[in-house]
Image 1 (cartoon, rainbow, N blue to C red):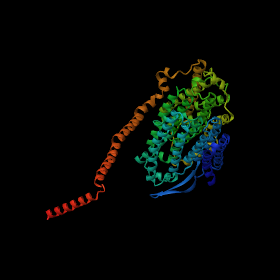
Image 2 (cartoon, one colour; image 1 turned 45 degrees about the vertical axis):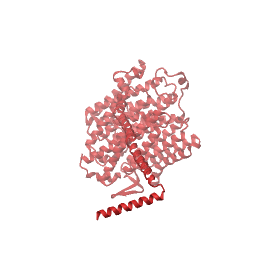
Image 3 (cartoon, one colour; image 1 turned 120 degrees about the vertical axis):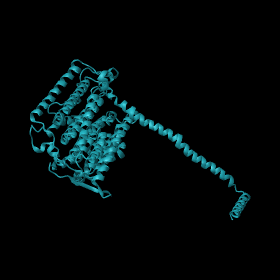
Image 4 (cartoon, rainbow, N blue to C red; image 1 turned 180 degrees about the vertical axis):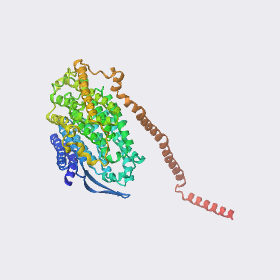
Length: 631
């Protein structure tokens, strides 16, 4: 198995080196095929390991070498293969290979084709390092690696200054979260004398329940998760990250990188289970983020921005699940979300490709006959995320709602409202894009055509998984084989038993019925508004009231600019003035003083021997006189 583990992680790295070093001189189809193939082979290897694993299998530690020792802590560079890491590996490489295939068609005309694929392979390598590492330090290397790749891919079209600004914004906001994560890792090492997961888990029993130390550690790690997984207050970078090519949005900002925060918390379950106060904080942050992002998504007109705020909102749902202790439910929704959100992003990319780069839904309409494959697959993704019965999104989201009700009916009520808003903005996006009359230009209308097979095949595969993905973890009341349930598969990674609040069967059925009724009610109402009544989205300046707040993103960007950005820029201006007005003048004063003293010394050292003899004689005379007087 050791060689197979090395192959999983090294193949994407080799693809990165191949494309980066030789890709410019090779045909695009060859570069795209090889970089896609290495990711797919990694998926096949992971699948072969998965088939040999079961719920009772113990973690496999593959030690590459001893990294360093410090203060009695031995840190090995190695990998941990267990049920959780295998699940993440297959999501990363499986969806990653589909997005690589899609990118061959999407980026076929781009002059930076080889560079784009080298960045994609580097991202896959970094993400695999993050989830396969056997300790927190290797996780952090992968964590920083995906942050770097995110920066490179968001700003890939660097000639556009706005795209460069979006890349910098993502990079800086992630660094804020990463500082908290570094502090948390250092504190773990100090308190447990270890950084590898198994040792930290064994030593975690030394922490008292909800002690200040465990709260500090878990809160610090969660700050890192807030930055990477775009939660309040560090979430505004993700919608701006839509500046990158659409495959980037699908791979990094929907299916993999932004879920790293969820993975971090679930991987550290042995710490978070001892910190109920931190768990309550996670629950509150997740709930607030889901609500704010869903509200903002209601009146966005850029098709990718709608999906971006949807991603932020769905990540909030996952953190709510984590906050109530339903780790398996969070991972279940992470998986199903990867299916349908990658499908929706790639579907939006197919729409944008057909529309010659247009992303504003107000310029679309009537596309269902022009791009039928994209239409059907996008509809499936919309139904899945909105809660159509027995599609993947409905099953995983219903688990979150049920667990939330067990925690508090009030929390369930808020999540229920958020789920309704999710259905509203997704059906709005679907009907504005695919129904009604075409509202674009004649040139765009002439250009309309279905995407090539390299783009539609990934859409069809993801559509299938968006339909059947929920059957991996059917509700307990339906009943199925014990090892078919995700909960049984992941149970061995949990160090402490988590007692979830019980919800009786009748209540659960009522909650399920309410969510299904809500879904069909929203579908009927939105269809009536945008198809029967043919309501169109308004120009930005004509929105008022709550619609204006939603369209302008609650003015959060303006608030952040006024309170943080301008303050930092002011510090920069002040620092520049201090440099020029104080430091530069001080340095210049020293330099000028040295020059003046040199000129004065030069007058004495003029090379005239008679003057030297005279001065020496005068000095001797003065010494003799002083010596005589002192006697």
